[in-house]
Length: 304
Image (cartoon, rainbow, N blue to C red):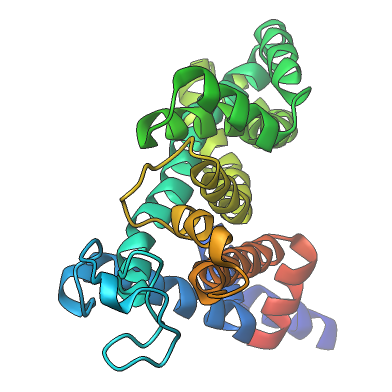
């Protein structure tokens, strides 16, 4: 009798609700204080870029030669003045626009191209072999060197720099998507959809893509920091954003000639780049842990 009651009690218990990837990402970020700090830093830079005309104390290119090379703490110029007499804080705020644009846009565009390529290659093995061998050719070049090569061939400018970064990122994201799609292709739900004569494109779009795209999103978040550094490096070399536009890579490049008598000109934008890159890397680590099955189990246990 007790066994029957036990079985009845088990049957009455509600089944554990299946949680989506978004749930674990949300819980993982909220439960990680480091991730919350990283999100806060990114949000501060983003708001500074959006509201730059209202919060910057000076126009970014307004110069006062009589104030050139003034150190941080100068009245009216909290972070000092550069070699042309321009306010560094104002240029830093305006420069966040181009730095975030050059760091996030190529990653998004690269993912938009890589997700269809990786999934198509995983679903059609012959096409997948051709696609992945083509990606291997691009893998032969280190990311930074390939970006420099493409930017130098196309010429300086923000548009050409973004094209170079997108081409550089495609093979990395495509491989991530291809590997995830190959795993999903062999799952039972895909076999069931095939048995029901579901068209291949519907299986790819409605069944596989929601499970595959999470890997691309996580990888994209982890790679933003490297793209920010690469974009700043291209601007530093004169292959990206061109002067007198306020951009952190250009600001660092302009300050290298005054590193001994006015180190703040290069140190301030360099520190901003470091903080932004660390924030994106820490957020990417948190997202990766949130989608790891082992850490998912920990989140469920904490919830209980």
